[in-house]
Image (cartoon, rainbow over all chains, first blue to last red; front, side, top):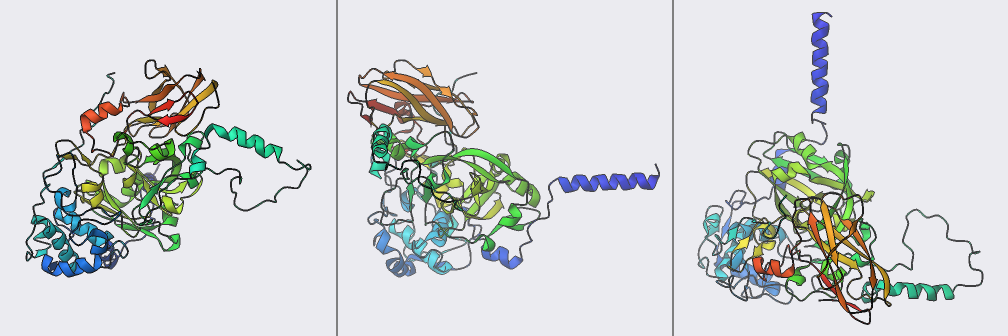
Length: 180
Length: 393
């Protein structure tokens, strides 16, 4: 076999192996604009939070108009909608009340959830500034932030939630397993 | 709803009544012509159960397990749980973005996903909150309402491992945030180890396209894990170095322990079994032969053994397991039984391939307390009264 033929065969084999090794060349590459528009992820560290800011003072008016009919004026809940405030120091009691204030470990979770899923009838309709303001107001209901404290991408992840250290990893199985 | 769930053993009687009413020309009338999409017989009334709610887009409907045969749940009866309603999605306009810590971010349409190498696998999906009321000792009256938030289908799609190989994971890709296109943009974080293990990006269910309430056109099937992570109407996969701490993972599906601490990322649905026949609200017409039938499943693998007690838990007999016994799928069990007409209880317990034994209610209560209502998998006991009526204990 000539040296050229041998190398050609080797190259062809390599190409076939590469083609079978995972690349199917399907779909298309997203544009930078598409990536920016679709990426709404927010993390406990604060990564992903957008520009903008707001305080409970500004949030009160938005909350009354957009949130209170379901969640109650003071976050006490209404009908099928559970309370979102209250319940601090009840988690180890006979009647635990898990709310944003008493239970949620990260303030960023409230921002993320309000931004992506609230108000229930019109999710995604609040601006970033409104979400910061309403988040601040919900936290203010439980005294976690003051009325004038300004929340933004830098300050929100630093808010210490009361139940921040209240979670453990999954220890299961926690009942009987037969030994083999 | 009530009549459907009460059919039980009384169905034989209603069938005789229907026979008595047939016209004289029985068997000689021309039937219906062919049709493009089949429907079940109008005599079949089994349906999902749900409560009417002031916020109907948020809720769940349960599978009528008492009426099911074998291990496949008909797509139309697969349980549902939504947090902001069922979106109607035109697959021609739907895209899945895969991005973040990957070498080659991609946008894929349904037709792209369908061109990748495909798999079909049978798996159960169970809501974390299934059987929650049994922990509280205020169980629902029948198996559909106590255990109906679990179903089992054959899912077809491309493995997530294939997709992640296609985009190329960077070393910092440790978690994957999956997001749906429903109004609330449901989102959950899944560890990359699991994503590369056995997760399916599914577009098919039981031989046809997914039903809208099951995530049409594309959903995740995360075998053995709580249903909420099986993101429906999937439109984005974000590879990242940490879990996002979305509402459902940081608060929603956590388990509150008696000491006030909570377990987070309790993904696996542990082994569970339940007798579906005879079960709550059914009536045994009289003493005699019955085949006890039920279902068992485990999020950790295959069901290895199911034992049934017909005498208040004193003796346990091995039930026959229907083949194939698949991993993270329903396994049908059966035990022949002759009822002597005396009051008793029926219960089942299963062991999976890891040796995990389905615990009793009291064992779980002792370890987790009364507030850890999600992920409850205790043994279910049905009481048989002297008149043949079956109720929960």
